[in-house]
Length: 486
Ligand code: NAD
Image (cartoon, rainbow, N blue to C red; front, top):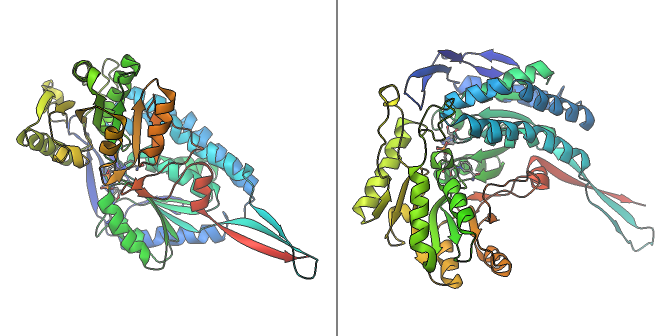
């Protein structure tokens, strides 16, 4: 069993109060790590270390020096690739290929991409006339915001945490990260990487713990935290926004979703089935961008339901390192209870269960893990709980539609607005529908294809602000204008 410590001012330390909590494997519920919980004074020490580093060693570096160090971080993650893969598999129980192909390489890329962006994106400049004819020149300079509080979730822990830490550091800020209590391992490992490449002490800090009355709340209320970037549930975002109001701190929020998939009858059928299957079931449905509402044009509805059923029934449950498995458990016993309670609600509200709806039979050594079946429903009204609320599990409701106008209204009839995936071979229609769906990210004939230079964020209750590319610079820096009378 591993002992996991906080990482404060370049040192791995236990919390001063001596409190710990346990991390159990999602796969078999065995104890895998004991984590030191940061108390109020530990969080204070981490924030003060970040504040000092911002004004000291980190602030003294040129952009080029910072960029070189961040390239070093990415290279060191790549060198220790297997350590990160193993840690992330242990934390999440998700299959090895998801780690090796997506989560860990993209995590490393987050350091390089934003280092390149800060080096290459110019600031604005305006010349203006003045009454005396001499004119004036305005130009912007970017300055770091200061200490950034980073609060991240458990569903793609390393990817989502580095997505914030990479640009924050590239812009010259320092960070205090509170990873999810469910997934503490890779964030802690990143502390080792920071030390081995020579990132100055205090630039990157990790505090472990929970939200309310624990490390998360202490961090968001700390007066020396200058801005907060958060990914997680919309309800948690509301609590953090209240904390950020004290002292007028800026926030960037990536929140929940209840995303619609739209399949027109003219779609490439097999590609659409494959795409919706991935978007509903990848990572056992624990992807904020995943599809839990599928709308299929009536002529292909029955055929589509049967094809997706076959995909759902084809998943291979197993340990992450097992090359024959392609499907993992849910993150925790608590989350499994939540997902199963939605499965029960769907049945109670009259759903036709096309497949799944319960717990799979697992071999004895995995029986205590948090396994649930991929599940497909049809026949529910749009008011049903599993059609309106985010389940965050491997499930979707499929509903037929008859017109473009109707499906746009169905897709938009939800409080969330994170992403959508549209499947059609009619190019004009694809663009038309994409422009009218109220979400931050639309994919056409694809899903989860991410270019880190593009805007990422949610509409409606799915978020505030945009990150990615220059949009990250907007959040992680302040632009100051300098006006020179000529
Ligand atoms: P969560 O909101 O429960 O927890 C996220 C983080 O916030 C954790 O580190 C947690 O400890 C911390 N936290 C909880 N309460 C807090 C408080 N009062 N103050 C400070 N910190 C607090 O979310 P989760 O269950 O870890 O993640 C799943 C959710 O995240 C889903 O709703 C999913 O849609 C969303 N998500 C969104 C995106 C996106 O990009 N929009 C990406 C991934 C996940």
